[in-house]
Amino acid sequence: MANVAVLASGSGSNFQAIAEALADPGRNPRGHRVVLLVCDKPGAGCLDRATRLGIASVVVPYGPGRTPEVRRVAETAMTSALETAGADLVVLAGFMRILTPLFVGRWKGRLVNIHPALLPRHPGAHGIADSFASNDKELGVTVHWVDEGVDTGAVIAQKSFPRTPGLSLAEAEAKIHEIEHDLYPATVLKLLEAHA
Image (cartoon, rainbow, N blue to C red):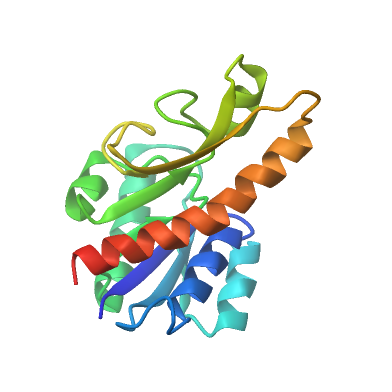
């Protein structure tokens, strides 16, 4: 049995999809579990989801500015919370911070992220909009290892769908989120099984 911790900043829909998949004995017979949600935004929707799901949560707000000291303090607190929870795998689910090499190095090989585009195309915070604005014939989702770059880690899994004539941005976004909620939990479970 492995312990998963999730880092999130927003509504937490991917966090909930992962937590519900791991709570399903049919999908998770070994009993891997989500033990902690770490959120950097007080009042974020993911915190309400954690409460409803009975999962411990902690808020680690970043201080003002983007100085190295602000990031160091926040990441030290996050690492402490993750270690206390006994996290074996750390899953980023809409965590909108760039992690330092020190944090990434501490969790390397156990730190995964999801991106709403087909990497290596369209990295960064606007993956959906950037891929939609491109001439790409397919849109989709990537699960990848986190390294020291921005969305540059090795790809673990991808799923795509063809761009259809007349597809709107809202429709593309809805389809991407639907794929995320299927692909991410399935990939997390495969990673946990591979290291069980």
